[in-house]
Amino acid sequence: MVYLSAAESAAITGQYFSFVGDRFAIWAHPAESLVTHRDGGWTPAQLATDFAEYAQHLQRHTKAG
Image (cartoon, rainbow, N blue to C red):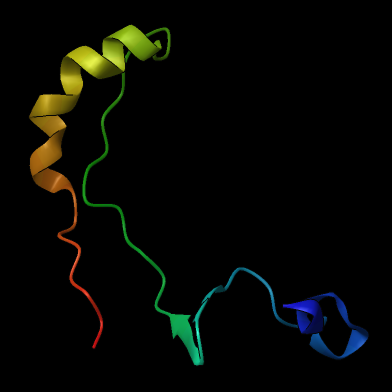
């Protein structure tokens, strides 16, 4: 990814890329699947308690082929 630090790539910003061996991918931007708020913010303990409720919103990982 040294290319991304070069002047030629100055217009590339906010993008997701991946390399696996000889495979290069440009990813689509993710979208929020859950938004929730907690007055006063979140602590690790509060997130741990509530996360089981939110887990249904996680994306399933599938191996690219």
